[in-house]
Length: 520
Image (tube, rainbow, N blue to C red; front, side, top):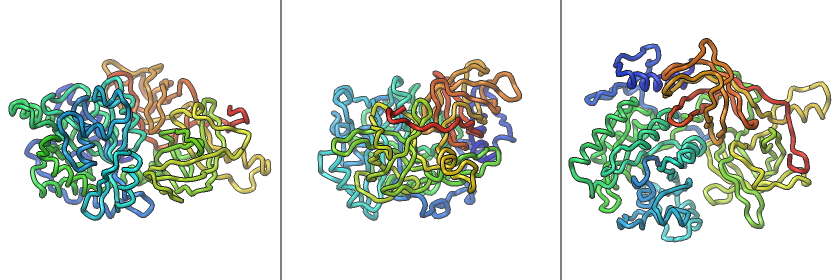
């Protein structure tokens, strides 16, 4: 079994043991478990992931992405405003007003859409901009910086949970910053966000905010509850009290061994300097890009050289359709010709990359791990792209490799090179939590990167049903339309509070389909 699935099953075993109050863990699963005792001391130096060992020139290493998670009204947007503008909040929403995009967000103080802000660094010094315009502020920071940190502001309210899930799965964050309001304590959505981040194996740090208005006894209780929650998920809380502990946390978080905990106030500035120092030193984790296509349990078929999941579509006057996302495989240049799809019928069309922007700066090339936007146009000029045609789960990929001397000539080779969508796929899954049992016919919502769609469980290998903590090979079928899915992808599936995680082992491709001039 691959190391990734071992880690997933280890997480499920921790969940199952906590629910049954059984302290004895299955050693066959927890081969890589760490101690979570409050007095534990980390001594295994060989577990530390050195950055120079996991970073290569093929990755975008100059931008680190941190997703802000936590319950509503915990101070996520305010903290982003304080960090990016190197100034404190006035206690009345001045800092968050620079982050929120919509009028209703400014009025009620609650984020309802994903927002991204950046911090720039020139050497060890933070680069700031005084411009009020969002686009101009980005341009100034990027042009004057050697490297950047992208802060992804996600939603805290329960009714926006699917938007938060999209941010954690589709925007590819390197780390998750859990924000807990000290006066509010650990809420239901706090626990939900922690469970999702742990299931996706995203290294996490914690910021306990609003300590200036929290009574000491309430603050103590919040810290104790937070520490207990982290230990339940196999995380070791590591309080940050000085700059020396910041250096220790930076060296250890890449290996996902500890969870740094900061206590701060965005109004008085207490503790903010320690968090700012940590963010300035943290490096990108390239674990999600390492070891591709090497799991013996996965059948790698029709793997593309270029894979660009689309997480945003825009219609710009004078430019046309612009798509944004993160490049997961390969390199893309201006004038590259790629396939766009699948649509609701599973069809693809060829498009030309007219121009590229990365963090609002024009570029000629994008490499793996880089977030970018592309202005595109169809190769077939009879096809007119419209924003309404796009849907979640669409990708840009290159043509499939075709064997030489393929029978049927040039036409057969062109058809064979078209990417394939799928309706059914096999996966190794583990149930993280379910109140009863999971059986064939169960229809959870699958979250895999930018993809989000209900899928039905057709069959479970070796058993009739699954309970919390159990694992098996499962056959899924998308309910509504075909999707583009890569073998080896990790996905989360959920229905209400019930959730599980899995890894795609085989994809059953549909016959190739191309768009007609009418777009279908």
